[in-house]
Amino acid sequence: MSKYFIYYPSSEAINPFIRILSKELEKQGWIENKDANVWMNMRSIIRHRISIRVLYFHWPETFWRSNRYTISLVKSFFFIFHVYIWKIFGYKLVFSAHNVLPHFGKVRVKHELIMRKFIVKRFDLIIGHSYNTLFDLTDQICKPNNYVLALHGLYENIKEPEFKIGPTVKLFISYSSNEYKGINHFFSQLLSFDIKELRGLEFIIAGNIPDDLITQLSNHKIIFRLITSDASRNSVLNEAELENSILLSDFVILPYKKITNSGFYFLAITLGKGVLASNIPFFRLHSHEQTLLHYNTENSISLLKQLQKIKSGWRPNSLILKELQSKYSWECSAKLISYSLDHLIDV
Image (cartoon, rainbow, N blue to C red; front, side):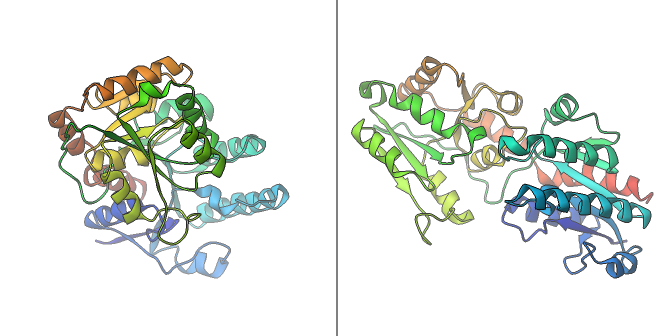
């Protein structure tokens, strides 16, 4: 028997994993309805209350996100109102907690904490996609009443791990000014090193990099290559461009300061790449000491030691990396999610 649900956002959203998960859920009998709209449409809410059983949210903050805080507050009240309406008409509400908090500026943290606490308390099921999600939710928000762990899977086009030791090691990093990603801090540490320590390393940098950073890297004689979108320099790389850029590299750098889950990490594993990352819990829990190098983001010497280790020929263990590739599966996670959804609607 087919069971219908609505994604927010839909599987046609920019993040490819939603599309993959939707396909796997369909194999379990759960089919996404892309046509129905039960947001701010009371007639539609009433009409679909029997056929659509579940509303599945990935990033609910998109409902109230606004550049103006007052508008965001008004939208938040509309969202809360709809939650109670949906529940009155029998819809089951599900939230995938990819990160404990969305990546907003500091001024909105309190607002987002209130909204996340409301969701965790009022929704019928909370899904975590990393081993540390439940701890992070309990520590920063509150403990969910109904929780299931369905680990983040890999992306499409899984590549065989293959590591060649050449004269130059290529390290990929995607530029972002978001504080939580720690990219600017990483570059400030990199620029503090003697250029002799960095010889033999080439940094492949994607994204909209500020001109002053380009100048600093050039003046320091750091070897780097800029990767920009075919659309324009200021555009975000599309899925294919991002994948091709990572395939040019030997390692992916993820200097995040704070994160609950990282799709970028799972993309690196999908493409069979080694990872240089900060020593936050997420990376420690989802890697192996022979596939990933950790460093302390507050200690530049720690970063330098790991870069020197890479220069000296350290490479991930291909067999263990293949084991990680087989471990993280959306097929397995979809079965866990499907079982939990069936339990919600008493199938």
